[in-house]
Length: 455
Image 1 (cartoon, rainbow, N blue to C red):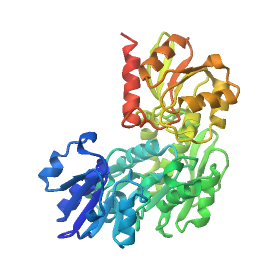
Image 2: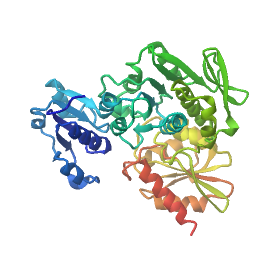
Image 3: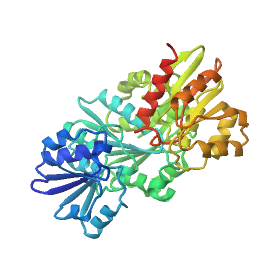
Image 4: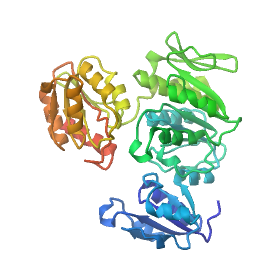
């Protein structure tokens, strides 16, 4: 991609924005990085940007920012509906996401994963499976490492595993993974996208540019993803825990088994799988199919599948105190993800939930809370609505506790209420931005408070 001598405007001073600005400078562009916040309100250090000669503009984004611009690179956190980008569209300026930039720079093929839940676990596992076969593997995208950074590092004969969010797909044009997977689609990010239909359409953009030479991995057990096969041009491979498919990944007598091109290949037994829970069986199936299509052998996969124990903040064991297990599931930022966590434990749960409310329906979540949770501890901006919905679903008032905006109070109360062999579970079913910079900060704060109980 030739950016030499071009004027590039980067919108959004987050991780992706920094990477896009840095790469555009490396490619010879004159770069301006703009963020609607004031510099004092942004945690990032801008010294490197200044040293690279990137012009920095903070605060109100005037239309004059667009004058003379050849290309706009937009961070995933920035919606296309903001006034500046609407003006850019009216002027006919080119707007591109950071992952689109990454695709255009990448020499290596990309295996890309999206879905409402399970993306990080599946992408991390896929990266490890690819490393069992390839000398150099990049793992990036919506997983903490900008995809554009990874794209520059990985040579053509190796591979890239990419986690892709719906936000990242909004400003894509030609993004074309060789292997794509959609794990599931349940209500999420409706405030950003405006409707469930638009949210799903963003997910489907992942495979829009694929051809018959490519592969699309879909969850047969999810109605929305199953229907995507009708709109796919790639070779479709389903995975299912429930149905004995003729082709794809299935459960056969307790083993995850691959059926493809007339072959039936037992891969690993569910009991030997390092990650536990039915949702993780699905994640493993998706990763196995993608790795297989990328050239990884079943023999290369088995040790990885047995040794991988999951990712931080996703049903992550913290410690045991007086016979009570503590788990950090801060990554559960929606009800569907929290439901999967609740289904993992059998001996009664003290649940800490709440945060930045996504305003999705809570009925299924609260019905499961009623059945499996002994005490529901609510915090953050969502507490009041969650409390009312808990009552509406028949949960007794004495089982519901509000602690305001204090994780400290939530952990202290959980310790006081929990009795062996119960489990204390942080699975918020909400985003974290009412109290934290992100779900990782929330999860690490929870873990530090829990470890403090051991002293």
